[in-house]
Image (tube, rainbow, N blue to C red; front, side, top):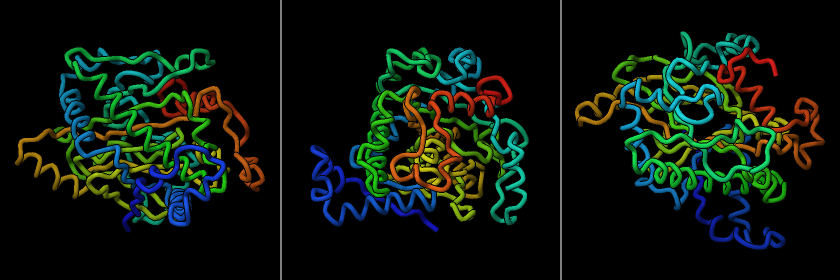
Length: 362
């Protein structure tokens, strides 16, 4: 099954300005697209979008720079490591992030109960991927969660680093904001129900780098089965396939992102805000036979064998309260999603996946 592609152009043309007559301005066609966005996020946890503001050239420029960075020697990259800040800025070396499926016993039980063909690959330990965290957008001057809002780290020898990271980061945040507005309308909430909570959130552009020359064997796990702890995650198209996602019905599919499209996935924070109407999408990155075909082609064309994902994590603001919104507060499942600060929630989740250095105690 292929995920549907939603073109954001029509919404962008009509959605600016006074929200009071929004339904009238949107018209039946665009209102229908909003309902489709909420339906697809609810049923699949993933969505492909085309945003005219995010071009193929933008994605290529970003990936070219990140390939050069990840190809640098490990000792150079480790200069950008900030474990004291939970790796929320700078580089996270391979072998640090622990997939949730390795440490969550409840999740392991669910995996064993899955039909064999839908079960994820079993990682042998921490993820074999590097990641770079770059904050995008303004941060609050006064916050209880300073370490989640730390200053960025710029590697030496990359004069265009800040411009390239900021440009691609802002464009992807803009795409997420449009999807968040469309989803809110589709769910019968005010247009800004989600985006008002995202203001000054600790959004992170977080590209990963996986060395296919070293770890290019079929079934190698780069990112073990997990969900994302944030609001919505967005990726540009990678040059090497390998991302598997699980639909709400438990079916596993390998994602094919068409050229010029962006992939959006639901995180745990949107699950909280919708009382489980959307659930955080499970996914993994594994070397598949399609990855191996792409490795052969890249080798013939003398291109980089680092698999870069241009991932951005959009977040609810650290000091904002996570709780079911609007009519979702009346849901029978609402009690599973108690009111709590988004920053507190993030710190608990980071502890579980080993980025905070303890075993998950809040």
